[in-house]
Image (cartoon, rainbow, N blue to C red; front, side, top):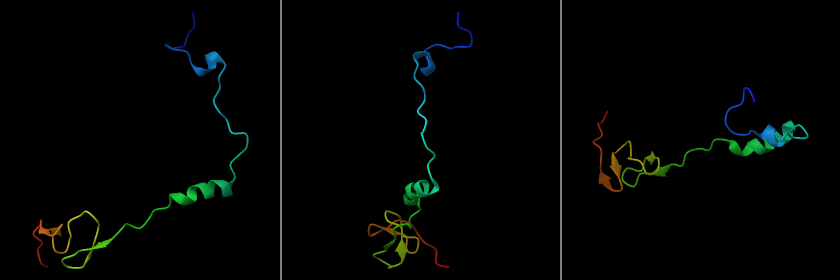
Length: 77
Protein backbone atom coordinates (compact mmCIF):
# COMPACT_ATOMS: atom_id res chain seq x y z
CA UNK A 1 0.00 0.00 0.00
CA UNK A 2 1.29 3.49 -0.93
CA UNK A 3 0.98 6.01 1.85
CA UNK A 4 0.57 9.76 1.22
CA UNK A 5 -0.80 9.42 -2.32
CA UNK A 6 -4.25 10.45 -3.39
CA UNK A 7 -6.20 9.02 -6.31
CA UNK A 8 -4.48 9.03 -9.71
CA UNK A 9 -0.94 8.72 -10.92
CA UNK A 10 1.28 11.78 -10.94
CA UNK A 11 4.02 12.66 -13.44
CA UNK A 12 6.72 11.13 -11.24
CA UNK A 13 4.99 7.72 -11.34
CA UNK A 14 5.54 7.42 -15.10
CA UNK A 15 9.09 8.73 -15.25
CA UNK A 16 8.05 12.13 -16.68
CA UNK A 17 9.44 15.28 -15.20
CA UNK A 18 8.71 18.99 -15.42
CA UNK A 19 10.34 21.06 -18.16
CA UNK A 20 13.30 23.06 -16.85
CA UNK A 21 15.13 25.75 -18.84
CA UNK A 22 18.74 24.90 -19.73
CA UNK A 23 19.95 28.48 -19.40
CA UNK A 24 18.90 31.56 -17.50
CA UNK A 25 16.96 34.17 -19.50
CA UNK A 26 19.11 37.29 -19.75
CA UNK A 27 17.86 40.72 -18.66
CA UNK A 28 17.99 41.96 -22.24
CA UNK A 29 15.95 39.06 -23.60
CA UNK A 30 13.41 39.34 -20.79
CA UNK A 31 13.03 43.10 -21.31
CA UNK A 32 12.63 42.68 -25.09
CA UNK A 33 9.77 40.29 -24.51
CA UNK A 34 8.09 42.52 -21.93
CA UNK A 35 8.58 45.70 -23.95
CA UNK A 36 5.31 45.11 -25.80
CA UNK A 37 3.27 44.98 -22.58
CA UNK A 38 3.24 48.73 -22.00
CA UNK A 39 -0.02 50.59 -21.37
CA UNK A 40 -1.49 52.48 -24.31
CA UNK A 41 -3.28 55.82 -24.24
CA UNK A 42 -7.06 55.43 -24.48
CA UNK A 43 -8.70 56.19 -27.82
CA UNK A 44 -10.53 59.52 -27.75
CA UNK A 45 -13.25 60.66 -30.16
CA UNK A 46 -14.93 64.04 -30.58
CA UNK A 47 -18.59 64.39 -29.69
CA UNK A 48 -20.53 65.21 -32.88
CA UNK A 49 -22.85 67.59 -31.00
CA UNK A 50 -20.55 69.64 -28.75
CA UNK A 51 -17.08 68.72 -30.10
CA UNK A 52 -15.62 67.86 -26.70
CA UNK A 53 -13.43 64.76 -26.37
CA UNK A 54 -15.14 61.56 -25.15
CA UNK A 55 -14.43 57.84 -25.00
CA UNK A 56 -15.87 55.80 -27.87
CA UNK A 57 -19.20 54.04 -27.25
CA UNK A 58 -19.87 56.15 -24.15
CA UNK A 59 -22.30 58.94 -23.35
CA UNK A 60 -20.72 62.37 -23.76
CA UNK A 61 -20.04 63.71 -20.24
CA UNK A 62 -20.43 67.32 -21.40
CA UNK A 63 -23.75 67.29 -23.27
CA UNK A 64 -25.19 63.86 -22.32
CA UNK A 65 -25.83 62.60 -25.87
CA UNK A 66 -25.18 59.19 -27.37
CA UNK A 67 -25.64 58.30 -31.04
CA UNK A 68 -27.34 61.64 -31.70
CA UNK A 69 -29.95 61.24 -28.96
CA UNK A 70 -30.19 62.99 -25.57
CA UNK A 71 -29.72 60.17 -23.05
CA UNK A 72 -28.68 61.87 -19.81
CA UNK A 73 -29.65 65.23 -18.39
CA UNK A 74 -26.48 67.16 -17.59
CA UNK A 75 -26.43 69.90 -14.98
CA UNK A 76 -24.70 73.15 -15.90
CA UNK A 77 -22.17 74.26 -13.28
